[in-house]
Length: 94
Image (tube, rainbow, N blue to C red):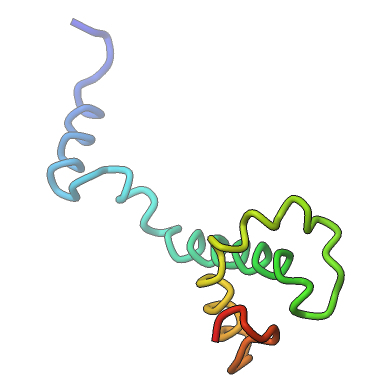
């Protein structure tokens, strides 16, 4: 038998059965903060990708042009969160 006490294994087994996955129990207190940070980073990415729509030259446009089709919906959500009723760039979304 191993030299380790059995209580850590019992605790993890109990957490798995009680909460489904023990990772969720440990990450639950941080979930809102992590989601907020992910949204902030996505907003920054959308802002960088659509700088031309805001009237600023995008120095990375050669690299980011492939991401435009994937992020049009995210752009729509972003400009609505920023308080713009319609897209500043006609034809991008609404």
